[in-house]
Image 1 (spheres, rainbow, N blue to C red):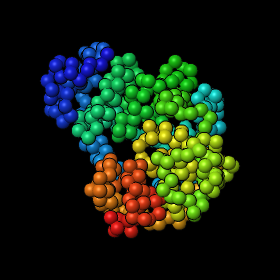
Image 2: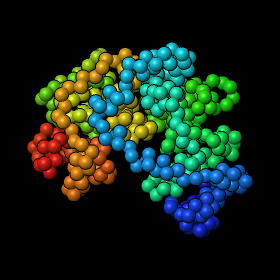
Image 3: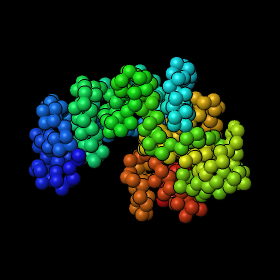
Image 4: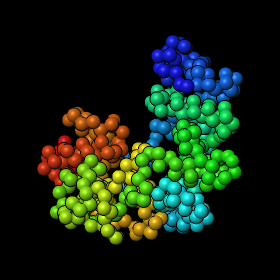
Length: 384
């Protein structure tokens, strides 16, 4: 049972619990917390003994410039003919596993295939960072210790029960296996998909896929419903009604002239998503789209993953349109600084066009009498 923050403070020196503390104090605090959780003291000591700060992890954490790319550029970089062909081959190879996932959770196989492709190229590239050192480094760093300290302790729990080797490798942020899951999620949702009595997310595709499906279901995936669908929008649409914060019933969108690119709109509430503004691609985002953000916080990544899932299910290549030129990373930071000065909460000036920045942009576009499509341009930056 995890100690409360107060109990931890009383049990060991406060410096031992703080990010940035000396490594001996930091390890002592972790040792105390692990023991309080029921992990044998000798096991905790063995786990922590050779744990080290990895500067490469810190560099990777601070250099995620890929998410500054616009949707079209990012999607074209990640989605290739080879990835589609490999996805189709993997779908056939593990058809029994995907059928079980569809029957048990109502999650289309394209969803898991897309994550599998983007995270590790279908298991081929799982990362070569020491998982123990990655989590130790990020728990010690003061940027997001509240996220990574529990993950480090969860890895220690896996080690205590024999399900984690000290030489385990994975992504720089501590994710493990073919669909890249963090230790707490492995503890909560790890599933023996191949029936061999063990859960190995690194070597067993059925284990990884079933575990990923269990995680998505726990995050609120609505069975047998779509997440994203390409649409056509009329030039006369009120752009201020677009965006993830403006969902409406499909019938309302149809009345406004919104149509599905193929098939019909789902009979669900949906939001018109214009990742690059009114002149770029257009999608209807349904409730399941929100679940993607529980896997990854990047709007660009999420939209690309959800779209790729539809491609793997047979959807055509999206219409890229002719979007107005976007902003560079430095321009985006300047825009975010101006939005903050105007009283908007954009979640920090990081140069990434996230949902908070998009909502602030849309508000300012309305105020200035511009088309409120949430796509920031040089013209908007100049006006602000």
